[in-house]
Image 1 (spheres, one colour):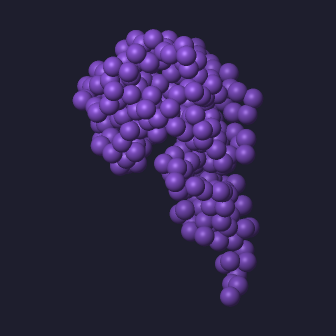
Image 2: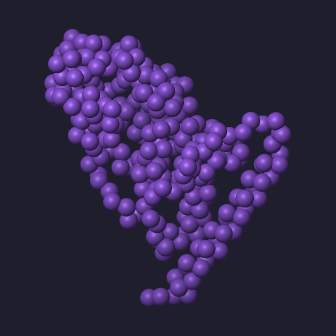
Image 3: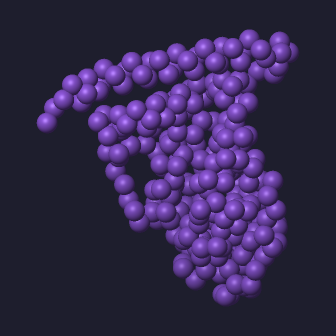
Length: 271
């Protein structure tokens, strides 16, 4: 049954959201005014990304720490070392790689929406006023696939801003990576594929990009010590195109499951 409250919900949402964004703009302006004149400028933003405010940059490390403790640790472990191989180990991972992955998850259902902190604030307004149920939200209608572990990450990363994504990457990169662990499989075959490749299958040495110790660098992920089962699944996803990594897909096109298992087992043993 329609009531005055439900009939006026869209109007109320616009008023509340406008009020919230106005408050945010005021706080951001005050932060800008208080910033030293010689403060370095933020890096140029991409064509679909707004430059983050000084306030967002300032709050990012604390926000990342809180998120890691409240959300991330549930799957990835309190120290970034997950127990279940469904979830990757994040401790010691490349900061740049983690930030890029979070941005990928963030953008999955964004429709080219700019990455800002305003959406997070707007979401908070909708939550505290209980208007979310009345208005609905775009991501609730987005196509979902529960068979993919990262589907959950779309929701987690949806309202993260760029500074927080980078801060989360920095947070986990500073945690000590776990030592290598024994793994079942053809370790010698895995070592050969990783260190030398296989010309007969068009595979270049994995070490060319991931490094001889599999520690990765920049946007290239660390593989050393990662769960063998996780690495195997990701290789399958990349080969099939479920996970879009064009360069990798071409390189591993001719490998079989035995090859994937061998490489995955080998990198799990590395420190």
